[in-house]
Image (cartoon, rainbow, N blue to C red):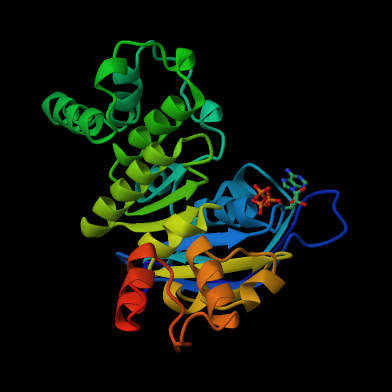
Length: 284
Ligand SMILES: Nc1ncnc2c1ncn2[C@@H]1O[C@H](COP(=O)(O)OP(=O)(O)OP(=O)(O)O)[C@@H](O)[C@H]1O
């Protein structure tokens, strides 16, 4: 059974004439990492808000279709239950900070305090997350004094602290340098190994190619392409729908076209895969 499913979801913001999301259906399986990609304003954040229930709870408008979580309609969960089932890290980490805690350490503990996690368990969890997100030097700092990237790491640690089963990360690496971005993807991999289901909105297709099981490509409010990462991110049709291909795939397609390489049925998506193909073809 899928952990979360979307059935014929359409949505129109108040005062807008046209739908921002049109007839989206999809089933998310437990323990998989999904990359949600698409051009700017294609509807990715709006879809995440629908999955988390912020639409229609906070944003009104016209929503049709059903969001089912573990076999129950989203409406059947109360706000507290939903917060522990679905973790949502916002695109802008500034909006995620509680604003009532003076240190990073307290900020990470805040959500757990609210749901009454026992003190010992809470301390252990915060210490684990501080280590996992390399926040050791920042624990006594005020969250609002941090850089954008540091805020982003604290915001993600705070939602993981609640141990949600389904985690939505909306552009978690947008303010991070390449090394910190890769670190976040490694944490995503670790969370997957713990059985979490992750929906990741990100433009860094090279990292998505390496870490995601499946890709959902949005175009003008619809899911234009969905499927295994290996199929979707190796398909030049992605470009037609405003998506991007990994640098490695683009390089390989160009090389194959120039006839410098023997063609192969499989377009490589990672540097490792290119090296394997080149080695097989006797190029290196
Ligand atoms: N609160 C709102 N009221 C009205 N329209 C909105 C609102 N929020 C977003 N939109 C519109 O909905 C469309 C989809 O926006 P959304 O932010 O969901 O796309 P996105 O794919 O996440 O974009 P980006 O990659 O730029 O973050 C856009 O045209 C946007 O202007």
